Every structure is written in structure tokens, then in C-alpha cells.
Image 1: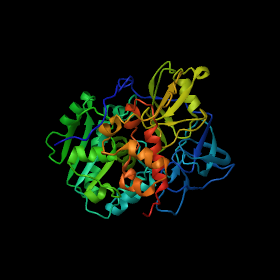
Image 2: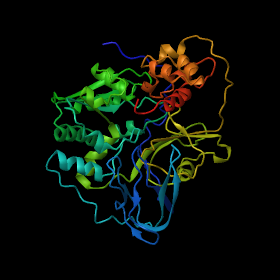
Image 3: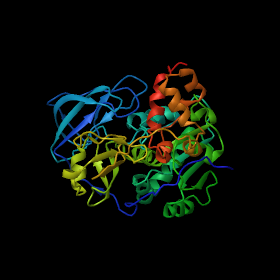
Image 4: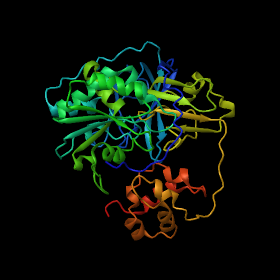
Length: 426
């Protein structure tokens, strides 16, 4: 089967052999009520209340949301505001930790008897896509369509990031347990654990663990970016095409990040909700690159200092990888559910942009066959019908077009702006 196009990157997995280390507990955590693609929660506690580890501190009746839990024990110091990446304002709880890490009485393994109780348990865990997208997991596991294939995404194709790889190396039983649990609870016949070829130790280990289980396939994918993008991994693993406006479930597929699958398995065994994240910390401003486990709400500054980062000369901080990550304006922002990496740079060259030379490199590398140069032109004149014809809404913002552009044009950024011009119901 022909693979989708992509680009060859220097993956720079400098921390692949760095075992996860626990960050010391911060004196104060700041936990936003919106950390997923869904609706913001409302605080369930107020200033002066004492909270415990694993206690639910935020929730909503809205379906498109996931509850929020405390990763520390301590006293709520204040209820403030937090600005999300899309620019919306939500409430945020600031909690002074007492260092005791007293576990809440709410923390106990959920009672799961059928699919419905399983989905309910996943929602109560606060789970969302841990690969960075943040889609509430219980909704992804509740499609109307019949699902015949479960894809566990272990590609981790972004440079620098090794958080998912360390999950596979350090917690392989949880990964396999999560795959089997999801298969059984959702009545899915086939599971594919897809891993990029640059992770041979993980591939070998899981191949041995799945030996004798014909329902779990370990698939080795070429190390080509953006191998881990949802539409790309679905096609490269199954040959199925998720068309414009479709959800993967309409092609009979669900894609779950490998760390999400492992977390769900642990939650069903312990009842401890999503209150911490494994984060890769790397970049030329970092003295000791590491994989760090931190409670959600921890100030990024404390993680950077723990990894001996030269904060005084820090020029750019990116949440995620260099291709799809977001620039962070304030190092005191908190760790979120979707945090998986911090890339700290002591220099950053903003290259001068010049006119498009019509070389076609952006077209040749686009995994979905889009024409970024034509989209760029249509966006400038606000030609919405042309943008529709060019299927700009298919763009997944992988950044490949920007990466190869000799004119240094910000094509991926333009694609995102162009998508915003098209009404959602059209």
C-alpha cells in the first residue's frame, strides 16, 4: 500500500533513554477549568476549602467536557481567571499545597459492568487526548457507528518529544492492558499498535507481548513526519480515507494515543484520575534535558529550573514540538492536561519572508495533497468559494509546507486563518 507523503526530519530524540523523574511538589498549583477542546467546567470548591489528591474540583453538565481534579492536597487560595489558547477566559483554582498529598476518599476503582458504565468511568477520570489535541476521550469512545478497528497511536513523530516513548518503555503492561480493555469494552475486533521505526526497543517488546494474540497487530511505520497525525495514521495503518467533514468513526476506526490508553487502564485499577503529566523538556537552553512527571497546575518555571534551563537567556518557549507546538508567552503558566513537552531555546531566528516562487515544494510534501500556495493566494483576497474548492478545512496544521518553503512563507499559519473564514455549517 502506498504511504501518504511527508517530510524527513532530524528527530532529535535526545531524552529517549532518560527515565521519567518526579518533579518536587510546587508550593502552589494553578488549575484551569478548561484544559480540553470541550466546554469549561465550573469550580466545585471555593477559596478557603481544603482539597485532596484526586478530588473532583470542577465539572459541568455539558456533554462536550471532561471534569477537573486536584493533583495535590492543600487549601484553595483563590479563584481567578485563565486565558486559554483560543483566547477564551475560564475560571482557575489556585491551591496552596500542604506537602502531605492526602488522597481523597473519592479515589477508588470504578465499578464497570458494561460499555455504558465504562464510558461513564472514562468521563469521570477526566481523560482527554494526551497526544496534545485534548479531545474528551469519553466522547471519542461513544461513536454511533460500528467500530471494527482500534488504532493506538505510538508514532510520536514530532522532533524532541519522547513522553509517549517512555510510556511504552516504562509501562508496557498498562499499554497492553489498555488496548485489551478498550477492545473488550467497545466490542472491537482488531487493534493496531502503530509505532514509528525509530523506536525499535518498543516495537520488539510489544511484538513479544502480543505474540499469540491475533487481535493485536504491532505495526512499524516509517519515520516520516507527520506519521502520527490522525488522518495519516489511519490511512497508513488501514488504507481508509477520512474525507473532509468526516470523523474517523465513520470509517470504522477509533484512534487513541498510547499514553491515553495506558492511563485509562491505570484508572480502572486505581481510581486515580488524570492529575499529572509526563513532559519532555529539551532545547538548547536546557542544561539537563529530561522526562519529568509533574502534577497538573505546576508552573512551567519550576519544571524549567528543575532541568537547569538558562531562563535569563531564554528567547522562545514552545509547548509541544517545533512543528505543531504553540509559543508560550509566560513561563509561569501552568501544566495542562494536554502538556507533553517543553522546548526551550536560547536563540530563535525569525527568517525574512519573500514572494512565492511557485516551486511547488509545499504541494509535494502535503500528506493530504493540498495546495498551500493557492490557499495562500485565495486567503489574501478572501475568496471563500475558492478556499472551499481547495479543501482548506482538511489541513491538519502539521507545518510541513512552512518547513520546506524556500521563501519562508508562513503557509500553515495562513491555512489556519483561512479555515476560520469558512462558516462551520457550510
